[in-house]
Length: 456
Image (cartoon, rainbow, N blue to C red; front, side, top):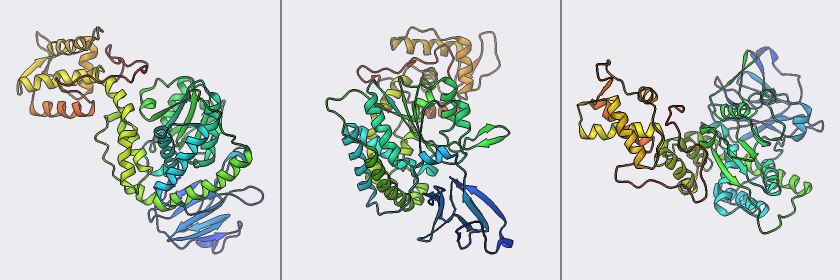
């Protein structure tokens, strides 16, 4: 869904292609949904007997529906879906009261607990993910759920549940980069993917998770922005992918899963799609204005925290719960940052700034301090001198012209101030602070990163 600007006018619905006052129409646009600056919402809804989607415009507290809708001098018609996509895509056909956001979230969490056997904390994250899919346009980054573990039955049950309650769900396997690029642009899908993910597809999915990051394809730009659920054998190695994802362990449970047959799925989808559509109407404008304070999280975690908070934009108490729900993941990132080269370089520079403000230090001397910091944390990897110097420049610390002893950095007030700011962004600890620890039995691959200068 995109946001359109322009002069808004009174909406007109048309049962077919015969348009009243066609001479005044400036253009015709195929759309998968629009959010207008005045808060009006144009969206796809379930179609006619032939299955073709229709459009619904929610504006000023009233609804207009039709095969095409004229609004603000533009005629909008439903975007095209291939027949097989249209048959699988779930679109709401009704709009029903959803209660409060807290009540709706509780209902979704209860489904995840009952049908998938998730503990309350994971069910709460899954519930917030579902709400995020209905407020997608308000997010800077779309979150991902990563289902990892040997229990395929439990994974499939969760996929089936999400296929009923997420917005524009698209369940598939055998996905390739070319296949992803072939999907309709701007449809705001929730991608439900069950397969191993190769490097190229992982990169493309990562690119598609950022709202303003369009993908070049055949001379045009694709908007594949959408939330993602991926069932795979292991956690993706990409750092950005890891930071925006929530891992849901799929380990065998002690009880048999409840029956979740097709008839129940159909009734569940009709009920919750109608409630969630009403939730979207009630909270989309609130979510667009929300300013959540995510400063307590490590820098890489802040966009995910913002997304989880935006899922409940009208309930400040639910937003506060995000800190506890994401605490373990945040600690894991902080533990990795403890020995990451960016953090070690910033920490060494901050130390000398406090000892000798206004002075200077050679990069070689700074390297020795950084090496001692790593050694004190049980890491015997040697830092490459050239990579260390490049990393300091990457972090924005200018060096003076080389002399007989090498390059040096002037410890100016600006340099020291930047070191302090980056220390907060990279979660650099105080000298007297104990190192964070990994959760028992868990360690993400490549936790010791960048010592050889290969990761920026």
